[in-house]
Each structure stands twice: as C-alpha cells, then as structure tokens.
Picture: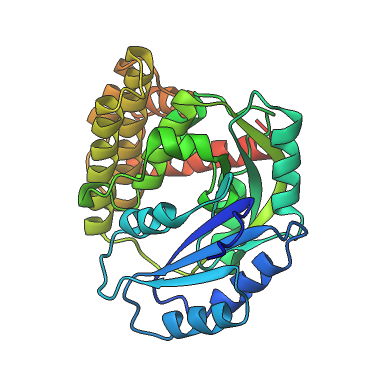
Length: 322
C-alpha cells in the first residue's frame, strides 16, 4: 500500500456557517506560492452549505480534506483540536474560515523560520476588511507592534497576534497539545494557547500585513449582557493563565490591572455605571497604563466631560503616533 507523502505545511480551519466566504478563503490557500501543503477543514455542524462547499473543493484538490463533526459543538477550540489531530506537516498554520492569505504568506514565514532556527513560530500583521467602520476601528487598534520578536509583555495587553497569521513548527503543537475546550474560555481559548506558546517558545514577527482579516458589522449598541460575559471571560482567562503557569507574579499583577481598567472603561463608556472603584483598583495594582493614570487624575470630572476628555486625548495620541 502506498501512503500519501507528508506535506510540509498543515493548515487547520474550523468552519461554521461559512458558506458565504469559504470559496474565497480556499482560493487564497490554493494561490500560495508554497504548494506543498494539506488543508484540513473541520465543519462544526453548519446548517448552511459550508460542508457541501468544503467537500466539493476537496473533490477537486486531493490536498484538501473536509471533516464533518455532525452536530454543532459551539466550541472553536474543540473544532480546531479535531483538525490538529489530523495534521501531519512539519509546520502548522491556523486559518479562520472567512479570512484570506496573501499569495506569499506561507513562503515568507517558512523563509523566516529557516533564517532564524532559534525561533519556533512566526506571525505577521494583518489587514482588516469587510465592514468599513469596523475595519477602520480594527486597523486603528491593532498592528501597532512591529518588533522582530514578539515580546512577552504584549500578551498582557491584548492577544499578541491574529489567529490566521500564525505558522508554528510541529514541535510547538507536540509540546503544548491542543486548545483548552472549556466553555468558560469560549473565544478566549486562542488567547490562552498563544500565551502558552509565547511562554515556552520564541515567536518571530514579519511586520507586514500578509493576512486579510474579515470583520463583520455589529449592531449599533453593545448589550450589557455581552459586556458582562466578556468581563467574566477575561477573568476566567486570567485564572487559566495562572493555572498554566504562563504569568509570573509581576505579569499577573499587570494583567489584573488591565482587567480592572477594562471594567472601568466599560462602566464609563457603555453601561453608565460607577467606574471610579475599578479605575482605582487598576492603578492600585501598579501595572496601569498612562491612560488609566490620566483617567484617575481626571475622575473628579462628571462622566460626560471625562468621556469627552479621554476621547480627545486618545485622538491626539494617535495623531502623534504614541
């Protein structure tokens, strides 16, 4: 019996109701200048044509496999883990079902790792697209980090890279295993995995947008229930990072400070609730940002005036490139 050759790169994509985008994503994979890959698409019980499209694409390209979970798990971590368990390549890449890659994305990343054998993974910047308003907001908030090596402190402020930008050596997956499938970490499991990766391995960065990251429109308002869930998820993530030994005591303190500051901002800007207590706790932890300290210094202002002042300060900071 002959066995299929082991591909150089395994690409893993969880898919749920992605019928509108999957063919465009597939085209970006098939357009890669590196052609020695396998693409594993795992359908999480979609109720649209996602699975049919994935199977049709796979029928025309033997490098592609479509896996059906049958019923919807609702857990991206579980879906990714199913694909990772099938991966055979020396390198593993993650790709969300609605994102797109530039044609030289894999080639550039493989070359980066070959040029830096001490590195274990490499990420890139990304270009948001889709909903114009959200794309502009995402572009303003992210892609500020351009250092050649990703620094540990980045994970204390935000997820250090976007999921579809990562390529890692197989040894990383063998050491870390899969994503945490706890429902409490829904949409935070990737953050935890990347923090664990950065804790144990060296991650390089190509400071160019080699990925197109799709953002969808949202409603005009954010519900208080959504904000509460996100806040609770943030603390679950913090506890998981402590459990996994990702944070040293200083980093844990700074992470708590960041969580309290997010609570203060949510209360001030979205919920109309008291915010000064959370703001004080953020500064008291000692890891607070300049924005948190400035907000505390100005918190004697009425809430509307403080919101306006902070927005103006943020606008000036962006203009000055700080």
